[in-house]
Amino acid sequence: MSAALLMLIVGGIAVVILGWLIGIYNSLVRLRNAVKNAWAQIDVQLKRRHDLIPNLMETVKGYMAHERATLENITKARNLAVQASGVAQQAQAEAGLNRAMSQFYVVVENYPDLKANQNFLALQEELASTENKIGFARQFYNDQVMQFNNRIQMFPSNIVAGLFSFQEAESFEVEDAAQREAPKVSFT
Image (cartoon, rainbow, N blue to C red; front, side, top):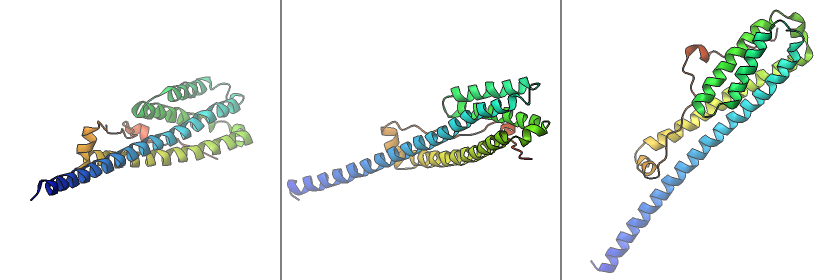
C-alpha cells in the first residue's frame, strides 16, 4: 500500500469523524436552543398571568374591602414570582402564587355581587385561559428538557457533550405534593 493511499484513507476517516462530531454538536446546540425557547414560552405566559393579577385585584378591591390580607398575600406572591429566576426558583414562586390564588377564589365565593361583575368574570376567564397555556408550555418545556438531557446522556453524543461542556437542563418540577394542586377557578 502506498503512502498516498494510506493518507487518503486516514484523511477520509478523519473527515467522517469530523462530520460526525459536527453533526452531534449541531444537534446538541439545536436541542439546547429548543429548551431555551420552550422556557421563553413559559416566561411569556407567566408574564401574561402576572399582568392580569393586578387588574383582577383592582376589580375586586371595592367588593372585598375586608379581605385586605388575602389581597396582600396575592400581591406579595405575584411580586416574588415576577422576581424569580431560574427554573427551580420560578417553580417555587409560582406554587406560592397558586396557593394565594386558590385562597382568593375561596374568599370570592362569599361575594355574589363580585361573581356577577362582568369585568371580574372577563378577567377570571382570561386568567383561567392563561393557566391552561402555562400548563401546556410547562409540559412542552419539560419534553424539550427530556430530549436534550437524553441526548447529553446517551452514547455516543455524551462524548461530544462532555467535550463541549454541555450541561443538563433543569425540568420544571413541583416538589411539594400540596403545590401540585392546580388553582381552583370557579365561574359560578
